[in-house]
Length: 449
Image (cartoon, rainbow, N blue to C red; front, side):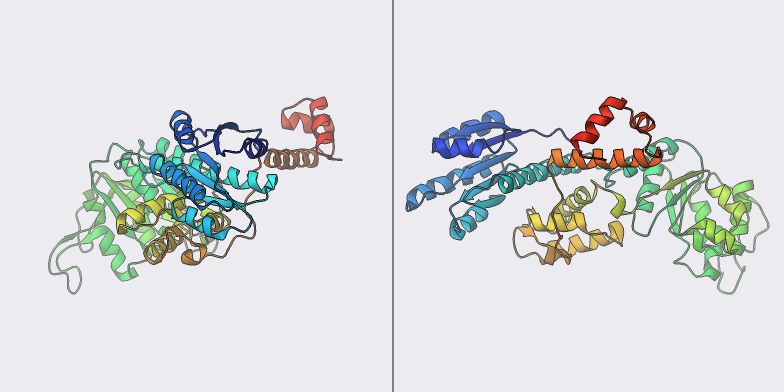
């Protein structure tokens, strides 16, 4: 992730209100301005990710217009800055006007410090995510890992494995649920290899009828069967010098598995109806969404072939297991479809972001692509809503309070260490990499007994 700035600009002309608002954010680097000129100067000097702008001026329409004009100028000068406007009690009219002028969010007085801190923290988080998204989109299009969003440890591990295995000739097996991006990673392996200038040929073993799959893979000679009116090379020959991607190899018929195993052992094959051996230099990358160990047990997959194709095995986590990736991936896809369709959509609403992060995504990346594409096409406003994504509203937004998150993480780790050590404090401290007195202090602080 890109480094996040903690600068917060508060625009408020009343010193008492300015002080009240500033006291809510002791853990931020707060700068303040009283009017439009001061706000623009501070904006240019500090480039704050978030601006808290009070537009509440009771019974003075011209003053409200001036403050909304300030908002408009801030958005024009720094379109990525998130502006949270503070309005009077139940002042819906000016809240709607502010949102129409580009405000990120609004808050009605009276000030509740806890709620206001949450809204501002969420604005900082969204700014951070969008900055990271822009960085990813800005990567050169020729990047072999283009489109692979890796902000979670499981996906970072996958990318590191791809980078290590790509320059080799090892036969690689990609395992993961449908829609997790197996072909994208196979293409990345090819693009990072010395074979990148040679063909990348993909064949889906589940999509081709069993009677045709063998001829599709190995080719055939003229007269090999009814309708074979001319010689036809198979995918193995087409991919000579490059990479052959066998998708859904778990669905390959047993008879054909034996023939593929012989090719992997000898690196030669015969076309259907042919008698001469053909040698090719092809790297094999396979993928499946099945549990091949279970398929071996029930006799649906050859054990010897499994060991041949799995010299390196890469397990791709489902989207639901990619904490930290879901919203980034959704932002990336949203940017792609906004550009593709020339849409006026600016982003996700706050509710949509919460919904994206909370949803389990059983269809993985493919489901996310379909929902976001449909939402961009059907969106009525500037921000995509959960309804347009056809997603349920999140029951609760994720906690962004760093102190609370740290406390919960420490409590979970200590409880697990105590469980593993059978309640032995010294052993638990050793597992946690801290001293026994430090563990006692943390347990007392979090009331862990």
